[in-house]
Amino acid sequence: MTVLLDAPTSKDTHVAGLLRLATAGSVDDGKSTLVGRLLFDTKSVLADQYEAVERTSRNRGLEQADLALLTDGLRSEREQGITIDVAYRYFATPKRRFILADTPGHVQYTRNMVTGASTAELAVILVDARKGLAEQTRRHTAVSALLRVPRVLLAVNKMDLVDFDKDRFAEIEADFAAYATALGIEHHAALPVSALRGDNVVEPSADLAWFEGPTLLEFLENVPVQTERRPAGRFPVQYVIRHQSADYRGYAGTVASGHLEVGDPVVVLPSGQRSTIAAIDLLGRAVERATAGQAATVLLTDELDVSRGDLIAPAEAAPAAVRDVVATVCHLSEKPLAVGDRVLLKHTTRTVKAIVKEISAKLDITDPLAAAAAAGPAETDEFDWDHDAPAPHTLHANEIGRVVLRTASPILLEPYATDRETGSFLLIDPASGDTLTAGMSGDPLGVFS
Image (cartoon, rainbow, N blue to C red; front, side):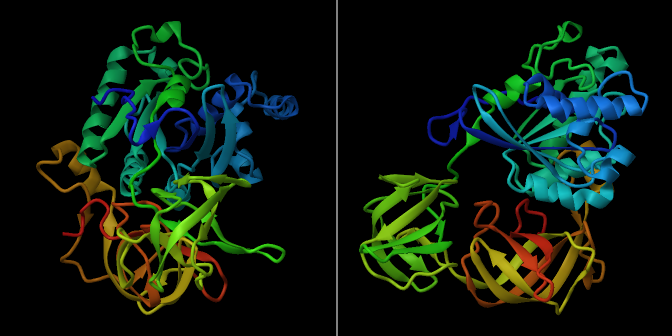
């Protein structure tokens, strides 16, 4: 089994700062209760919020506060006792800040899990200790692998209902390790908890004294976060800033990946104009360097025609413009995606017209994945694309497929396996403006061949 905490390196990881994580798992595995317990035990719940939860719990005849109500905000969620939408929660400890996405467990809401995990640096997937890995648990693990979430943690919940059995935890841990390895997830781990009672969530539990690893909060506070996936910077321009009273022309945006430094020779794409970074402003002050995730304003030594949707990149490590896109997509809308559909493709800050030329295959992430986990990576593929079946003409909600797109103008799309930021895109309905599909350029897990 992979060690629980990988040692951070000075090159590309750090412990302090912000951690984005997503929780997932099968229905009734206790995701919302775990998140509620985490918020409550870290004192991240306001008094009036907790009083409202206590009042609702009493009205339902419960003897203690149902902490799941802290995250299930929709009326339909509270009535059914399930998570439907992605619930985002923000909390902090003295060591780190957190943005947590509590995602749904139902199969029909898998698309919401895609949304929540798309920017996550850690996926926390829950299982019921009595049931072990369920089909939806495997599906969420597979989606995490497909989205290339850097780290996956299995929280084995409801340990109190199996009398905190060490052997039961070891059995589930071994099953998950084999499955995660089959999917190509390099950094994976497992820990036992009881969300309802609070065992091993924030504080250690005497009933889990045999477990030598950290509590869930200790894991979250210390897991390394990858901060720079590539040395070459990517800076999509979002807005042009002009000061009428001063000779100032800056290009505002967020560094998508890598870093930019003052003095770097750069190229503006897709025009191909070259210049040098004259200055970088960060929160109103001049800095020498801006790194991935930072919102900054870049000033160039030359007056160029730069506008929203352009990309500033190092002159010697610039991406190539493409118009023919082969991608893995997860369809999010109730409106099917069909061959011949005209859509808008949004990549970073650039939006272009596109047409769906081909939908060549659909991905089966149920039985074939279970077989992969049982057989191991050496004996079978992790994913199954039925290449002998006729090419599908449509993708429906929650389906994952391989598509070929043709854009009306060039975009600077890179392989998703190389960079999650510049390798991802959205397909949008041009008539309604609704988001249709989330796309990942290329073949992130090598399943097309």
